Image (cartoon, rainbow, N blue to C red):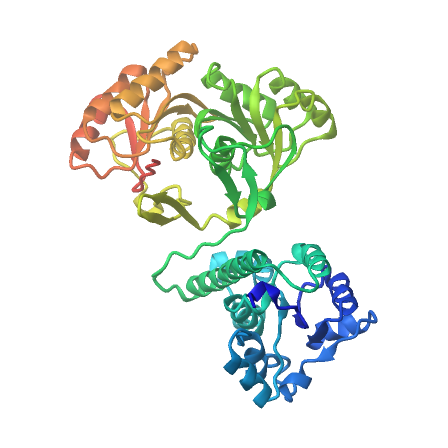
Length: 525
């Protein structure tokens, strides 16, 4: 007989998540399938008038250690792992009076959800002994073991881990005289191993985090949230995996695209650098302009003034609630996405008049709590690094020129430095204390980036006299600094660290430029 021809006669049900389990168990009862169960699951089923038998009838051994040991028994695993196409397995089951277990319905303790409760402590490295014990109790042992065994032996023992497939299972059993086709069995087994792999990856990553062991394997597992229409280009398939929808809530407009999601991520990484009311406009992951003001409408005008051409089809992000005045200001501009922590009812009524525009709420605290690791694929591997969360090295932040920046210049330097951190390298940002004036991004030469930033500012009619300049990495030669001097800048912020630092410092002194070294660079590739 083929494995798919064996009827299911016995089932073992042990679930933490009780969703849909009553309907499934009732259907199994009606089909004459004998159900064995454990602990809380057994109590739940019996309290709803569903007949089940105690797992101890198979093991002849009680649950012990507060339920930690109940299914970990040879009688259970013999029933799960027996190959029903082998006569000697049949004979061994009969010799030891064991039952074949044909169906295992199981889901696992909520380890991942428990971690979520303590995410801040885990991120900060402040998990105490008692909290760690509470988390460890949510590591399921019996469940993954039974599922793994049944998935290995899926030809004869069907593993079911996903409550969303209970209805499918009921229909298959009803329509096929309690048998499950081979291809369907394989599908359930594949889903089971995928589920266990995700579960173990989450546990491994938790232990790696609290132990601070050096990472030997790249363990990352995330649930698919949704498929995308396509990737960066129409010929590329794409999907989104992870916790994106726990951070961002799109409540109006077309579905988010692959490129929208990249831009949204870049926008929020930039805006969380600012505590004062700030607006940023993003295009192709680079900021077109950034502005700060106690009034977010004025902040937007400052950001938009940096570049009035590029924002068309871009993304607007604001770190304050969107009110009606702000909505009125931005409504005429075609934008792909508007991101904010909140939107007033009046602003929603106006902004939703454009059907294709996406409106997205963001949970900034949740976003920050997930900023631990960045990774990206390369052919044949994965690059993994800590997230670049620090702005500059406090101990190395120093003024290196004869002239110190005045208060206004220092504020401009810090503003520009925050923005430059999020501009593709080579990055040059001209700024004042509350706005960007010119941004040069992604050029092979730092001098070219500076020239582009200056040209942009001139095109917008912005005066760079008395402005400040931020460079994401050191000036390898004095020519980059001299470009800034020529444009009218009076103060510069850069990491320092070039073998020609002294040459650049001398050029700054000759031109009465104030210059600050941060001791930290912010390349962004």
